[in-house]
Image 1 (cartoon, rainbow, N blue to C red):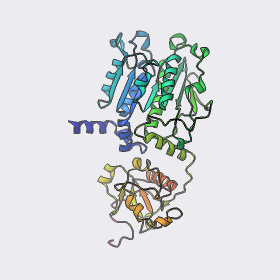
Image 2 (image 1 turned 135 degrees about the vertical axis):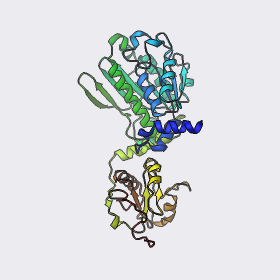
Image 3 (image 1 turned 90 degrees about the horizontal axis):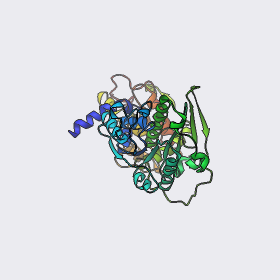
Amino acid sequence: MPQDRHAHTAERTLRQRTLPQIGDSGQDLLSQASIAVVGAGGLGSPVISYLAAAGVGTLHVIDDDHVELSNLNRQTLHGVDTLGGLKTDGAVSAARRLSPETTVIPHTVRLTDANAADLLAGADLIMDGSDSFTTRFIVHRAATALGTPVVFGALMQWSAQVTVFWSDPPAASGLPAVVLTDVFPDNASTHAAPGCAEAGVLGAVVGITGSLMALEAIKLVLGTGTPLLGRMMLIDGLSGTTTDIPLAPSAPPNPSGPASPSTPASQSAPSGLAASAAASAGDTARVVPIARSDVDPAAVWLDVRRPEESRKRPGPPGTVELPLDRLLRLQGGPELPLPPDHPLATVQAALRPDSIASSPAGPTLLPFCAAGPRSATAARHLARLGWPVQGYLDGGLPPAITEPPGDPRG
C-alpha cells in the first residue's frame, strides 16, 4: 500500500516535478514542509487548495468560523451543501480530495495572543489570510518572536496586496527584515480600515491573491526565485495591472538578536534564498556550447536529466548523473567538502587542492541534457560557484551515443 501511494503521489505531481527548480528533491522539500494557514475563508481557499495540490506535507488550518451563504462568492473551499459547517472541515475535505498524502490539522479556535505561539511555533512559514488587522497584528507579534516568515495578503474591493514579512531572514540572502508594523502602524487608524464585509470584494480578485500567496510559499519552501520580501505587489483588478513598491525596515535589525527557532523546510529555504539572491544579481558566468567534436577527452560528462530519462537513454561510460533540480541546490564550489556519496565528490577529489582557489587543475565538467537548455543552466550555476566547466554539450545528447570522443575503446 505505501508503495502504491508513493506511485500515486509521483504521478499526481509529475508536471511540477518536471520543472528543473523542483524535481524529486524539491518535491521532497514540499512533502516535509509544515505551513500554518490563518483563515479558511476567501484567501485561505486558494492557499489551502494549491498548497495541498503541490504536495505540502502538513497544513495547520486555524479558523473558528462557520460557513455562511454570503461567503460563497469567494470562499471556494465551501458550498451550499456545507452551510453552517465549520470552515476547518471544508479545508480538511478539500485537501483530502486533492492530495491524500497531505495532513491537514484543523484548529477550530480564534487566534489570540494567548494561543498564537503554541499554534504557530511548529510552522516553517505562516500564511496570513485573515480579514482584520486585529488578527494580523497577533500573527505579526508571534511570527516576529519566532522568526518565522509570513506570507501576507489583503483585499479591498477590486484591489489587493501581497508581500512577505520576515523578522529574521538569512543574512546571506541580503533580503531586508521587513515586518507588518514597518508598513502598517498598530494604531486606531489602521484598525479602522474596512474589511470585505463593509467594503465588498470580487471573488476573482480573492482567487488571484490567494494563488499568488501560495506561489510565494512554495518559492520559500523550495528556496527558489526571488520572494516578495522588501517589496509589495499591488493588484488592481479594474485596470488589469500590478505594481511593485519597495518596502524597508523602519529600524535596523539587531545583529545580536536570537537565532530563528523556526526555519523553512529543514534549513533548505534559507540556503536557497541566499542562492536565489546571488543568482538574481545576474548570470555573469559565461559558458559556451561545445560541439561533440570539440569535447575535451578528459572532461567528465555530467548528465543533468531526470533519472527516468537517464535510464531510458544512458550517457557514455563514466557519466556522472546529477539531476538539474539537485544540482541547483548545490551552494558551494570545489573548495567546500561534499558528502562522500555526492555525485561530484569523485570530481572534487580529482582536483588539485593547491590550485582550486585560482584555476583548478584536473577534470572539467561537461553538463548535457536531451536538447541543451537544462545543461546551459547547469553550466552557468556550476561556473558561478567556481567549478571547472568546459561548457555544455551543444544540442544535447546525440542519438545512439555510447562513448565519449577520444575514448581509447572507440
